[in-house]
Image (cartoon, rainbow, N blue to C red; front, side, top):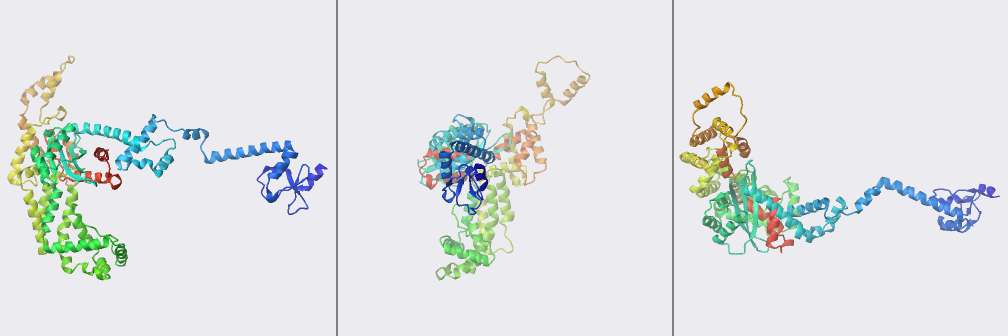
Length: 621
């Protein structure tokens, strides 16, 4: 009867996710399959909505053996499915255990990752509490789950101080190896009006690589008198073990206290070309017509800067007139070239500005008149060529001091020369700029620095040195070359091989059999005569250098000297001495830009020692 009963039961239609349905079915006449029957005892089981709980309970109570076998079979199925899924989507058991174990703090991997986070904080000038940010932590977990990020106190008290000391030791080693160096310095006040003084040195190493190292951004609460500044700079050099006698020149702005400090210390000072050019332009702008046009420009820019409606309208009009979608620029009194940039942008957007302002009764008076436009065009024509020279001379990764004399020559003979289509105002601006620059660069001390640097630059040599002082520059080169001490590896090509032979013979060696050529060698040595005098070697070196073809102005003079240092051993030392001098004090300006990013509104309470350390790391890492 059991077999007959089973034959009359059919399996459940559709999908069967549970194995329990192997023991339950329906009569063939029950097309809708509403009465669930046990295939073992044929009892009808109530299971609303296909719930299998009652089916399991029935087997457990009535058919214990079948129930246990079913449970075991169900577990095996789940285990097989899970294993297959893990192989496709998850790591192996070994990898899972590996990822679950954090790196020991003493392990190299943990130290490497912590150092990398510290480098990120220092180089990118990020607040230390960045390590407590939820997003930052989540990013590190995604990179490496085994890395346990230390607290901000660990970075503040251990990681960054250790990194500073390591970087300082490295910089100390580099600067101590410098034969001679130049410097730049400036004063700055932070967001909380705390005064700082910076010191950056520039030098060229023996492989003719130009190095720039920010040594300090020191807190200076004393009065900024020339004496206090002089004392502070001398203490800074002493702290780094630098000899003042190796300081070739210091490049500064024209502040009276810094000029006095250099004079008190007896240091040779070069005026910053950028500041001089900026002051020359300011001096040339002292004209009532220019002052009126500048006033209109500033009010005009202000009206667009502080009104989102005006910005929106300007963008719509720019689209209609097919003009570049540029915002207006504001003049910064202390930033070189910002006035030219403001005027250039206003002239570019002149039509769009007039159309926007014409729809506003209160601001129609700000539309520049044709007289204002003429003045602005005269100013922009005079100033535009100067911007590129300012940017070129403000670099710190290439030689710049030797470019000053050629630049002044171009200003006088080409760039600021009167043109046929120049208005009277444009001519006046050019004349005033030239008169100011020529006057400020006419002192003998400045001229000698620039002439020596230009003469030692293979691109220019004596091309831009005045005829009446060429002999003086050549004589000065000879005098300084007499004091140059060259290494044996940089022996002058004019020294005879007899000296080398004598040195080799002084070393004990095995007795060698004399060859036939040795009889002729003695005769040749006697015929050569004594080695040339040092002055003759110097004269020959100078003559050879100035007779060689000049380097292309686009080429790097340091690369040329790197290849020619064995040919001109004494001149190459002087080239390292003079070509390291920066033409502008922009290096110190960049230090304070970095300081401003560090002492931000969110970190305005940083202590001076921390500021110095963070600026040092950001500039020298």
